Length: 224
Image (cartoon, rainbow, N blue to C red; front, side):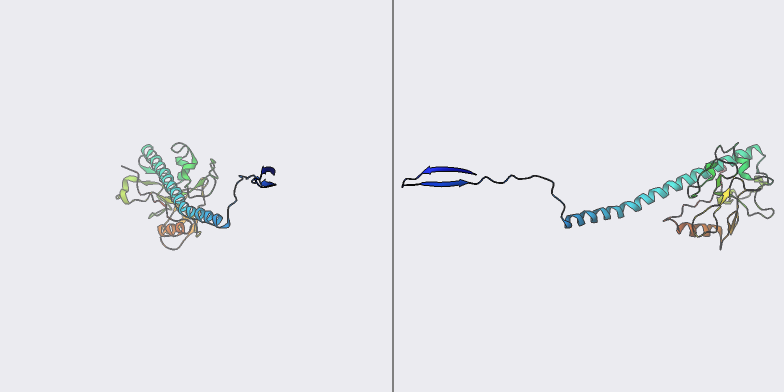
C-alpha cells in the first residue's frame, strides 16, 4: 500500500490510500460436474456408433479370409485331380494328408478364421475346420469317387465347414484324423458329433448365436 499526501486549499493534508489489486493466477480451471457428465455422454454415444461398425468390418474380413482359404483348397483339389485321373482322393488315407504338403504348403489354410483354436503347423494336431462331403451311396465320404461321374458340378458339394454340435461356433477336426479324414454329413460331422436338422441349418443357427452375421460358406464347385 502506498500513501500520498496532497495539499489542501483549506488547512490540512488529506491522506489518500491507493490499494493495489491482487495478483491474478491464470491456472487451469477444473471441469464442473455438468461438463464432465456431458463429456462422458458424448464418449458413450460415439462408442455406441463405432463398435457396430468395427464389428462389421471384422466380420467381413473373416468372410474374406474364409473364402480365400476355400479357394486355395479348391485349387489344390483341382491340381490333385489333374495328377490322379480325376479321382477325388484315396479312401485309404486322409484327404488332408493327400493335399498337404504337395498341393497345400501350410496347414493354416485348412483353419477357418471362425475357428478359435491356435494355428499349428503340425501333421497331427494342426486344426482343420473344413470337411470333405461324406454323403455318398457307398462308403463314408466321396473319397475314391471319379469326378467324371458327377453330373451336376454346379450343385456338387465338395467341402463344407466341419462344425461341432455345440451351440456356439466350434471345430474339432485335426490333421491327424484317420482316413478318409474330416468329413461332414447331412446332420453330423466327424469329428464333431450330430446335430438336429440339416447341417446347413445347424451351422447358421450356431453362427448367429455367437456373432451378428453368419459367414459360413459351403463350397459347391471350383472347377471349370
